[in-house]
Image (cartoon, rainbow, N blue to C red):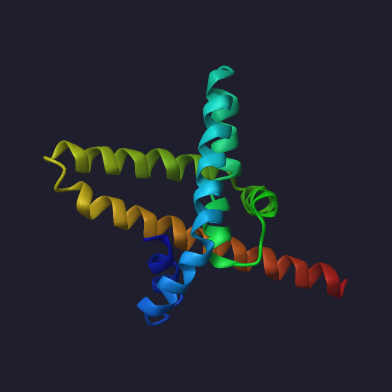
Length: 145
């Protein structure tokens, strides 16, 4: 679903052969997701706030693994932290609102969730792409100075 969302955001034709080829990164993706939730869980045990902070900082790690096939898990977490820096509060409020929308979808006999879940995934992917573009622009400006 995330790979399809990445293609939709870039207006790239969805090629199911490419999606099958991305199964090569499936293990790295699964390990990234498990590591992310372990980090968030441990953070939540420590007074909830650290878990929320870690959740915001590292929410793009799985997308980075799918998007940049040659990146390692540790590097994906580092890049996610860089992308989220400076916009943590906006990402926090987006998470609150998208969770509320998904919960509202669940209330309507799970049928609404079939609409809200893909929509929020695509929105999160769009945010990732925009943050990545801004990050690349700032690196270019930094190198030119």
